[in-house]
Length: 88
Image 1 (spheres, rainbow, N blue to C red):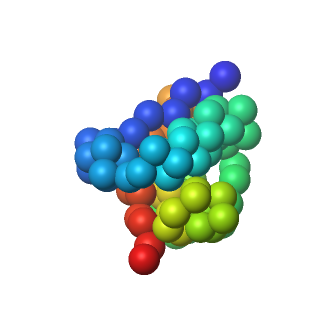
Image 2 (image 1 turned 90 degrees about the horizontal axis):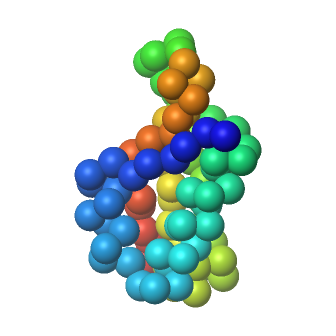
């Protein structure tokens, strides 16, 4: 199983989200551990990793739309959630 972790900036943003928004983001984190290739691919400078974004709609978060930006390293079999971008 792949493990998914939050970067320091993402962890800080996570604390600023509402409880329902946090629950939605945590649901994405857990689902990434089972299926790392979710969402839309982003350009990545490292050929040994893949950057992607999962976009959560306000209906899914019970609040704002949130983009979960992450990088998956196949060599390490790990995911680092880089950013949580919360919309209006």
